[in-house]
Length: 245
Ligand SMILES: *[C@@H]1O[C@H](CO)[C@@H](O)[C@H](O)[C@H]1NC(C)=O
Image (cartoon, rainbow, N blue to C red):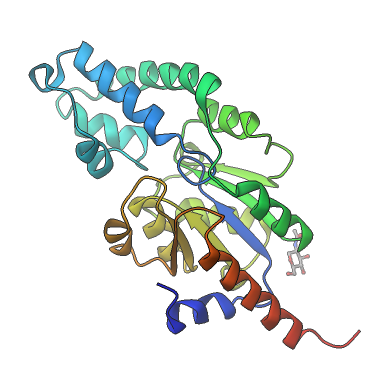
């Protein structure tokens, strides 16, 4: 998937200033925990006559979306009930996360690359504040991020570009020198709509689904040789344009 046009949109970023990361599914493999919590709790309240939701339903309708949108989708006639359900579900998610949250492979390798290059970095997520803070802290990344932008802080959550535009503002960097890491269709759309190249991770969502949102590059995780080939090329471009010291 490393076509010349896709790598070109990364090289255009030179000199690179910042990297923006989604959290769920991008920093950590949290979707299985969300899916488990939704499935158990929806079944408990006899949603869909007690037939458990499928992973396909979860990926299509829930993953990467903001809670208010999920509440409306699950409980179209009773938003208040939907919001209460989402709060309870998040409490269950945090219990599960505290015990079982796993980082996406290679995230600490990319973290070091970002630090070594002196880039700014922000986490940009539709997750509720308590979840975002817990996940970032469990991953040991609280000191890594210069800013954390929440969907709750924005008028419009992803797939709207606003959260990513807010992150650029918070870091005082240009969209022309920043790329995004995302794992959901909704998130990739948000990054692309904000004018940045997006690296899509197939942590949980299949490549053909992610491609709909037009990512620049698709990788399995941060160990993927495609990522490091692209970053190496980016380094070469940087070296080529850097004025001699
Ligand atoms: C933002 O960055 C520009 C240069 O890119 C700089 O001139 C300006 O002072 C910065 N603003 C803040 C608030 O840091």
